[in-house]
Amino acid sequence: MAGYLEGIRSIKDLPIDNQRLFLRVDFNVPLEDGKVADDTRIREALPTIRHAMERGAKVILASHLGRPKGPDAALSMEIVGARLAELLDAEVHVPEDCIGDAAKKVVLDLRAGQVCLLENLRFHAEEEQNDEGFAKELARLADVYVDDAFGAVHRAHASVHAIARLFRDRGCGFLLEREIEALGKLVLGAEKPYVAVLGGAKVSDKIAVVEALLTQVDALLIGGAMANTFLAAIGKDVKASRVEADKLALARSIVDKAHSRRVELLLPTDAVVAAGVGASSGAVVDVTAVPDGMMILDIGPRSVETFSKRFVGAKTVFWNGPMGLFERPAFANGTFGLAKAMAESGAFTVVGGGDSAAAVHAAGGDIAKQMSHISTGGGASLELIEGKRLPGIEVLRSAAE
Image (spheres, rainbow, N blue to C red):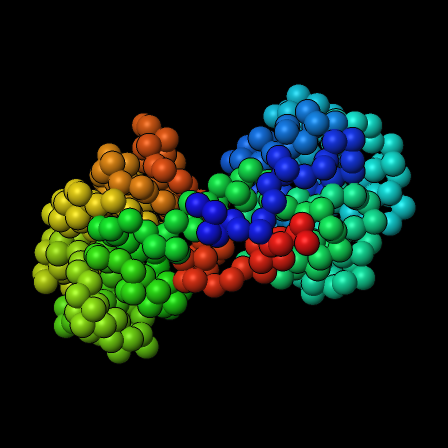
């Protein structure tokens, strides 16, 4: 799949041996009681980090964490560094800052194969401003630049964009390489039949990706709360269900566009309803017969069956967004049932990051393992599918020139 990776060097081909390597990772992980609550993103970066250590690089890791407004002890990389040290079974040095004397001293003391994790990049407002001066400060710490933070490549931030231009030797880590390769297959012409599944809360969040998919897919399956808006747009009374009233005309136009492009657009025909999101059980009803005061919180079993049938014979399936409130057992069957059918389809299956990735992992069993690719970046994966050029990827191209 040279197409999308063209001009981007892999860490395997970069001169990192015994060099100071600036490795941008995505360690923006959830915290709970001063500890890392989910270390998936840290684990995903381990192959790249270990490769660098084995080649004797002095590994300088950098990431953001949360949305601090200046230094904030609760969002210090110390917490993440402690978990990383456990996973690597190696010491991880965390300086008091990501630039300046504190960072320089720690980096100078690193020996071949040792690791440091710079303090939270977003403690400096210049990070999100893509500030060149800040990027230069970071760049002074290293000889080679590698980006392995797929979750951040859609943002033109200093550690992702401005800094990369300052290095002749720059490229991608194994995680970013895998993401570009898998998602690039979809962008550059997925093998057909190509089926896309979209869920989640809002139509407004997915307009651009829907528009892009309508030019590529053979079938588009819509579930989740966003399906309510489509159902309302075609005249179904979804009663107390969440609907984006200002997006009804848009939903109608998408239905018309799908029809004119001969894309099969499937909406739920039955649903699991309850009086509110706090309910511990739900009732299955036809979407034409939602009782007064009730809201749709999952797609029903008939819809799961119909949607799943579209995976039979499909060569490519892309999924972004859960089918319902999967965090509550009463409303998880739609999402988990579809995940199972997708995993068993034999197609090239790609799951967009964020809630979709969480849902697939929550589905249990070997479902996650059976997927061809589960993305680590929600926003980045959607923007790539939309056909956008992502700043953090584009800046890595033609680095050998």
